[in-house]
Image (tube, rainbow, N blue to C red):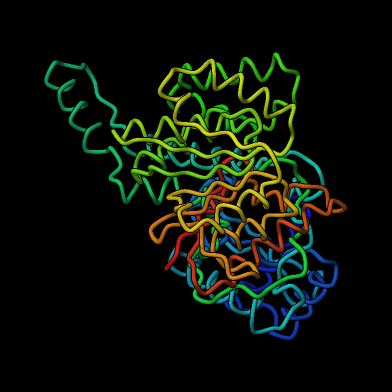
Length: 437
């Protein structure tokens, strides 16, 4: 937290203790202090205060640094005058924190529920040190724990060494203790993550001032712990770079492996890949189906003639079973999908992967579901799935980009379709997985 906000939470809680615990000021004085802090847009409450373990550990640390006394300065008498609190138990502190939270976030009806405006360093463009701060507090807790459990001895014998080893084992945190000591602080800002009702529709996606979903090193770490790309995928990557096409359009290691495992675990035999680019997704799907011991039939659609030629050359350089499993169609994807849907013998697909022009995502979806005007049959098999790539680019694209709105409208369209259930996965730029109910 920014220092001013941190001090403000202490001032608010200190005024509460002065009123409730010490009877040094009145409730009216307490509320006057809270309203002033709130009007200044400073924080009266922060969710880290819910973590009683850190709260009590920090209080004990203050007592150690102040020569064995808490010496907490609180308003006393007239506002502006001061007294010092020394005696309060952990159980009393816990009770008062809970009472204070209800007052400032609910009962008093304060603006923003008692929260501050831009209370964190990263809110104002500075580095986010929250995790470092919590790690420091936990380190202090562990140090204090070690000091309290260390026993001084005279001469150390072999028997004492064995006893020390036993003590270490006995002092090792249980899983529940570890949750409290190490995880409670990390999750101080956790919000309830189970939705009970559908989210209301919104005209646009919320602002998101980042061009990636992840902090530094997350994707790199994930890739290092994902299976190495196959020789066919590596061939596609090398030849794409040599072609001087826009390489970021490749699905890459993480997503290609995800697509391969989807085809493998679903035992998919027919797959429609909308948006070939240079073929990495088509190759991944073919590898997945074949790895399940099944025949693979991957139909991949590419609009651009030059890109389709590069993809065709890449497929020809893949292993024969992959090359023969992939059927490349060059042309308009909507027209190609309509042709398949108009053909009674055209069949359906176990997986439909949408990764083409974002403006047409809803049209591709409606064709897959058989809900486009014209009464065409669905292209998705009853047990199949649609995978819509880049669905979270509704957040990542520039707010002036029409494709951002198109993706948001697609996400809303799927969310409101009573025929399906879906989940949005935070893989790369988002993949929405959709299946019939």
